[in-house]
Amino acid sequence: MRKTEKLKKNYEFRFILTKGKYYSGKYIEAFAIKNNLKINKIGIAIGRKQAKAVKRNYYKRLIREAYRLNEDKIDVGNSIVFLVKKKVNVDEINFINIQNDLLLILQKIGQV
Image 1: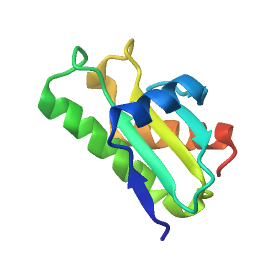
Image 2: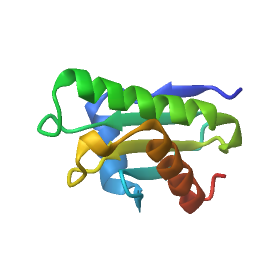
Image 3: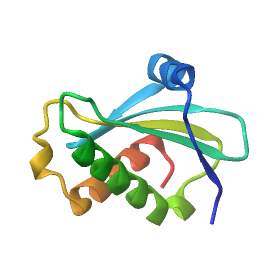
């Protein structure tokens, strides 16, 4: 199992969102950039207008779990920010959809 750290600071998110390359799925989108470290760094965000706090945290847990299950397939040395798309109805999102989207995005990045 590989070590993955969380992105916590606002400037880390902002740097990846401005300089990173954009990848999109049906329900989630991602920005990725190389970090030249021996670890991956991930950040997960969902807009405040999309859902209340309980739902936002639930979707973050879904994305985190889908990432954890596929963590051993991913190469190290990347910083990735996952975002839930704004145009998506959050009631349609479930774990299978998130996992399929995450795998699709990681294939586009070239990690899986």
